[in-house]
Image (cartoon, rainbow, N blue to C red; front, top):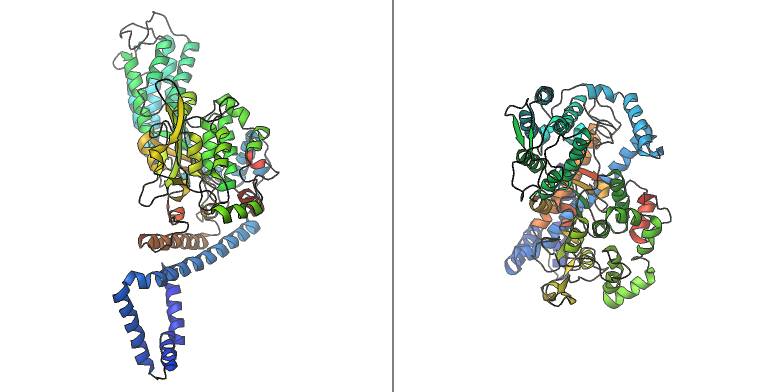
Length: 623
């Protein structure tokens, strides 16, 4: 705001010094042979403006002057912002030693280098201090002691009650990003001990089953017939791992039938212990406790943004999550991210591992292979650079089509095959329609290929498209038709709903979002003045660890937020012109990040190649 006021005052000073509002009317009157004073010229200018406002409307007269006024602010601030960012980068190249972490070939090597780097920079001292303004260390220590105490006493019922308090969405403040941006590995020791005690307590609940017996107390329609036997250590370990895996992957809105089946298969109806406060712990009680913990904690979703060719970085993100076993079941994709999400959600884990190989994947990444001359000719002829029917045919493979099926899966078919929940966003081409988030609940019979095409339909590249619905009649005959009779068309989902946080939270109970952000107009503004999780800034901790120092970091934040404010004002006043019939203001004003946000860090020439020239020869971005 202060920078904007400074620019406004400067412009008014220039106008005042040059007397533009006076000289121009005088010149006009001189053309007609009249001479007026400066004061009269100013009055004439004001009167003309007021007359036009009265006749044509204030908005019609002042729309473009106000638009140019705000745009001049934004461009001036953008220029200053770019200079500031390059200056901070220059300071970091001088004062911050380059990290050796990029030389690591495996995660184990990276972890070893990271631990050594943390010790070298004295970050272990920060970890050892329990005090922090982001959480109550006394409360954390109390919960840790109580969990340990009830676990050692064998009071399972009280242990479950404490776990239900500890496992929630806020996790008592320990998920604040600043607690994980001060070091490369881990966080404060008191938090690590607290989390470890929660894990140990969960493990303990199952280990107690080693000495417990099984009793038949529930009807067979709930649990399978049981036989009396003692649970061995091996049985308990299998029960623990299978239950926790199901708990992690089960949707919050499910009835937990998978968990009940898992328990019944292991013939556990009633768990008893002499040390419990009640003496009896039923399967129903344990299941309800697990369900409550899951409900409080919430689900995790992977969100893949748009970004045209830069979206190829999503392949590497998915490959890393799959190999480590942390790939969420709920996945959203927009534009280029929808292409990757479609591949992930239409293939099993084994199929996905074989698909995410360069020799398999690269032959299909050819949508942008057309020469620029052909693109220009197509645009002159059809007002679009690419043919949507040709793109739809290429996208069928990404949607799960094989050599026998020419048409890919629908959302419902993909969910039934893999258990993953695919969400694809699209923007309605008609005005005043809300953005659409397609999934197996809202549009179960829509083909994934048509949804991906709609989500990637950027104006100027592809015309808005219809969603295609799969219809199966009583005789089993399959046909395809446009959804809603073809009355609605859709275009790129990044315009209004690049990361569908609200939909995923409301429909699927997601509380944590892992975002892979590759939009070229958004990535440059991810500054992280105090570092980010697992990537500290490298500046002095006692100075707040601000990149470039506190003053430069404050100016960076001020410029960035002021640009967003000016764009928001233009959008609220409806002053932004519609380009290709689309309001582009939401490209900058919507939410683009989650609890964890990953952005590519590559050189500009590689970004340019990805954005406009297809896949480069170096495929390291897919690793």
